Each structure stands twice: as structure tokens, then as C-alpha cells.
Image 1 (cartoon, rainbow, N blue to C red):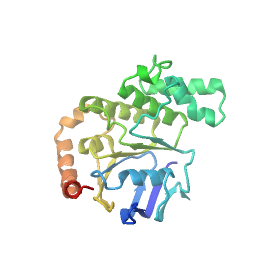
Image 2: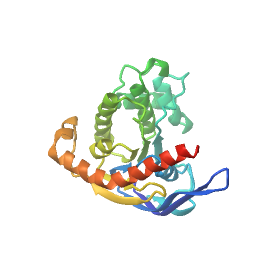
Image 3: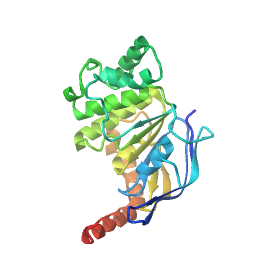
Image 4: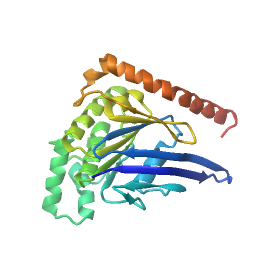
Length: 268
């Protein structure tokens, strides 16, 4: 299981000045079980708002999200989230950070430890179980976060630009690492990004969003074979798909840029 369906999803915020801002307007989207869907769009298009609604952290103004046919009304155990920030407990080791969700669910100490060691190994962190966050690199911390999310055995993994804080070389490396993990555990993944190469390299499909208000402009299938390695970035097929997605995103990126420039001019 792990199917997600968004139906006529809308979200409106009210600023402190009383101005209504429509973040999402009529999102209709279906994510298939065990699919890796990337949601791509410029800054300010509502990507994170969409993820927060799917996770149950926010409520929509209108419309609804269904997970396996049941409406999302709040956080649920079958959905785990990985944020851009590491959100690790600095006083806990990597293993104890991974065990945290399992402890909250009442699992025994032995089972928690076994699960933590297993998922840290899947995340490529065998041998670092007893290191504290300050002893880990940024990429390692993010992998601890991924291991923590996987350890609770969710059906759905939501990822909000988890590699956004990494440098370009590290980011590319960890994209490949994430696909290696995905090939092993096969969860439904919704991955939020504003990076075209990242979306195409990772995803089975790419949902391109419009600038505010956020709508689904088009969903593009990515027919590159799996398992994927970084070599696919050099292929003509990848370049062709990138060009097609950029044509969809270009106008939305221009609108986002112009809105940012206008905000700077008027001091917003």
C-alpha cells in the first residue's frame, strides 16, 4: 500500500496585514504505490505546503488528500517525513536518533537497536552508530535522518529538499545513494525539489508546479531504466527529458524571479 490521491486541494494563508495569499489552487494528483514522484517548481510555488498537507501537518482550506483511500486528518504512522534541516537530537548518538520513533511506539530496547543498526547500514553508516551529530558531516546527518524515517517502516516517505544544504558534488553523490536505498526498501516516495536534474535523475515521474498559486502544470514520465547510476546524466535520453521539463518550468521560474525583484523594490 501507499497510494496518495490529492483532490481539488486548496490552501489559502492570511498575512498579518490581513491579505489573503492563495498558495495552492486546485491540486489534483495521484501518486502510485511504490512510485518515486518528484514535485518540481520554483521557490514560492507551494511545494512544501503541499507536502505538509499530505503529511497531516497542515490542513487544506478546501479539497482533501487520501492515503490508501482514507482522508488525511493529521499525522499518521504510515507516513514519515525527512526535512531539509537535519533535526537530530545533538545529545543522542546516531543509533539513538534512529531509535527515537521506535521507542515512542513502544518497541523493546533490543528490537530498537536491531532496527537502528539495520537501517544505518542501509544508509551507508555502518561503523558510525555511536557517533554524535557533531561528529558527522552534513551528508551523514541527513542519512541518519533518512534511516530514522525508514526505521519506523512507513509506507510513504515524504522528502522536502533533503539535499538542499549540501554542496553540488555531495548533492549528486547522495542522490545516487538515495536511489540505492530506494531500490532496497521500495517505499512510495514524494520528493520535493527545485532542481531539474535531481527531479529527472530520481523520479519515475516529475510533477511540475506553477508559480503562486501552485497548480500542477504537467506530470512528465521519466522512462530512464532502473537501477540508475550517475552515468545516465551523460545520455542523450536524459538531456532530452531535461529540455522538455525546462520548457515547462521556464515561465514559472521567470514569474518567481520577477516577484522576488518586485518584493525587493517595494521593501517587502
